[in-house]
Amino acid sequence: MKVVLPLLFTILTGAAILSGCTKETDFEAIDLGYDYFPNIEGTFIEYEVDSINYGIEVDTVHFYLKEVIAEEFIDDEGNLATRIERFKKFNMDDEYVLTDVWVQKRTSTTAERIEENFRYVRLAFPVETGEVWDGNAYNIEEAWDYTYTAIGVSYNNGVLPFSNTLRVRQRENINLVDQESAWEVYARGIGLVHKKLTDLNYQFFEITGVDMEMRAIAFGTVE
Image (cartoon, rainbow, N blue to C red; front, side):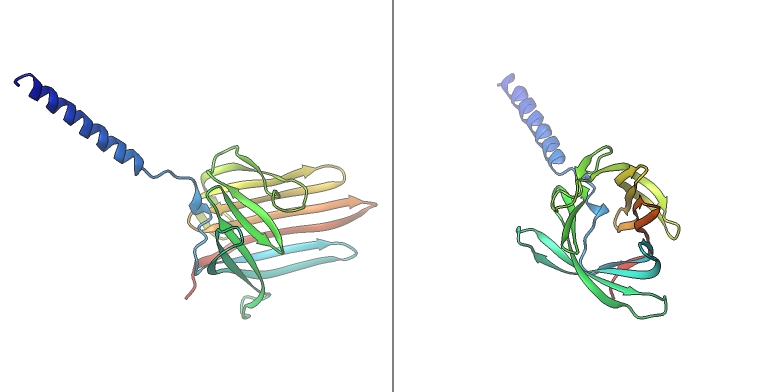
């Protein structure tokens, strides 16, 4: 007994220590980057938008856009999704007017938005530098290889500073005919805070396409 008891005590103590370590590991939080796309009902982001449309005439538009996450619902795939109410006004002192409704959702591996009936994969999880995915995987448009070019960096969109952001390069195709460049910046705990899209075509001495930029100017909870 003098030998068995100390041995038994050692075994039980070691088992308890191992059990404690296992439990601690099980509950350890793994940061997959979900809060770069928080998707919380009752929140909003307000943007200032500048858009130049090239065609027969050049049309320059400046306006304000407010996106409100209005309500949650279960979509056709059985996933939790949210309805995005989009409001627009052309002058700061005007009242916002509802213009359209989009849908977005965050799954375990993607952040997706349905915009004008086109479904885009805006982010891929886990968030990792160099990760590549097709942003047009669920629509009929040409494949665009999205990738993260910066993660966890401070950023200023020209209006507001953000302490922790990631940048997604969506498109970079520049040649004698096409100028296609698209990227987005997401802030942790907020969502999209800066977007730039240039999609221009040069043929027969004419330019067609769009050059658009949107910057977050306010965000918060709907009162």
